[in-house]
Image (cartoon, rainbow, N blue to C red; front, side, top):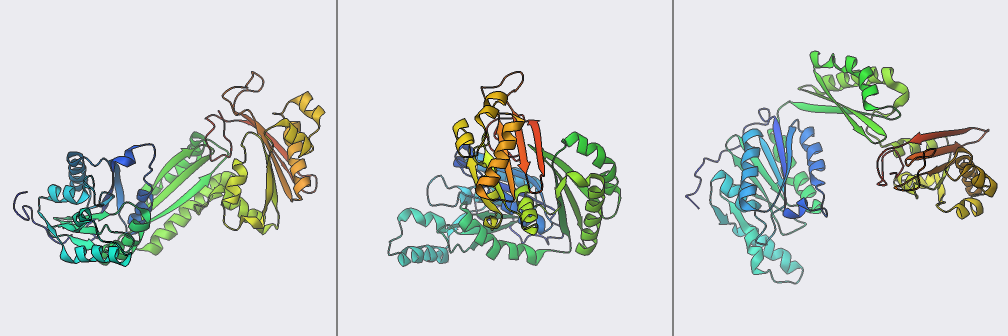
Amino acid sequence: MAGRHRYPVVVARPLTSLRTAEILAVGSEMLTPFRVDTNSLFLTEQLNDLGLDIIGKSVVSDAPGLLEAALRLALSRADVVVTTGGLGPTDDDLTRDGIAATIGCAMHEDAEVLRAIEARFARRGRVMAAINRRQAQVPDGATPLDNPNGTAPGLWVPHGNAVIVALPGPPREMKPMWTTHVRPRLAALAGTRHLRRRTVFMTGRGESDIDAVAAPIYGAWAQQAPAITTSILAHPGQVELHLVAQGDDTAVLDEALDGAVAQIVSALGPIIFSTTGDALEVVVGRELQQASATIAVAESCTGGLLLGRLTDVPGSSAWVVGGVVAYDNRVKVDTLGVEAETLSTHGAVSVPVASAMARGVRARLGSSIGVGITGIAGPGGGTEEKPVGMVVIAVDGPGDRHVVRTSHFPGDRAPRVDGCRLQ
């Protein structure tokens, strides 16, 4: 490689001037169906908390030319570039090399890093393989970041008016390194600029219907001080409204956002189930616990999916009694007490059967509330009268309280936020 420091390496400017960040997940395995980049979710939240806008996220293979191109592009438009992965000992772990090539500097073997890697192997009664020596290579001007949970040190690389942060890919290594070494460095440079956000979760109405009501409200927020930007996102069974405000005074930001949320709640109240980012199952669990109520679920088309979501909530044993997957009609009859005549007369996917399932599971398991779900999951089995995607949900409670709804859901059999797996 050409001479050392072909481009000047200087301390990054104060974070008050740093407005944007970009995240690069490095690794050809991340471009297969077998790996998902979850690190960027954690990093996005952390960088936002420091007042940085995320302007891009990319996944790039271990090919040298592609990695360098991705780094150059990120540096051309972002003030902070965070990479994850590619810091291992093998020939295809090229993040160190890619950074050095991108900023035009040489690399050197860091004796202290090498000793730390050798010591890690020694503590485990092993001799360091020669290949691990590559992990002690550090771009000139970079600061190695200690990794107590692995052999791959991270890198803090100031470059011109930006900084590159290279972190290992495994979350158990990446997160502690960020918390211990990276966040304090960025926080020490931080000025008074902050980013605050709120999220409003809604269900029961479509994105366009919600936007028709909300748009005149949030349209005025962009003109106020502090300005509030919004984005509306639709997911199956759920619509999210994200509110973001940036400024120097967190108290002013929080007051503006709280007022904006109150406006949305006033306009759309009945369909809003969370203004704190809590998932629907968390909200349901909280309501059940506050009412000292319990729930049991009888599922046909969903195959236990609803019960799975309810029990994913820590402490759910306080309000979840149990459930029955009644996929076969014999289970509906023998376990839930659904009358065979009801099944033969109305069919398994019907209001009477869903109601009987809800009542049956409530009675059999002794819960305060019983839920019965039956539907046509597809891809076959639908008719003109009962098409694929038709689902009947019944809820049975104390005091003759009983609600039944028939819905038609699009999509496939994959788990969905609305609680059904459907074709």
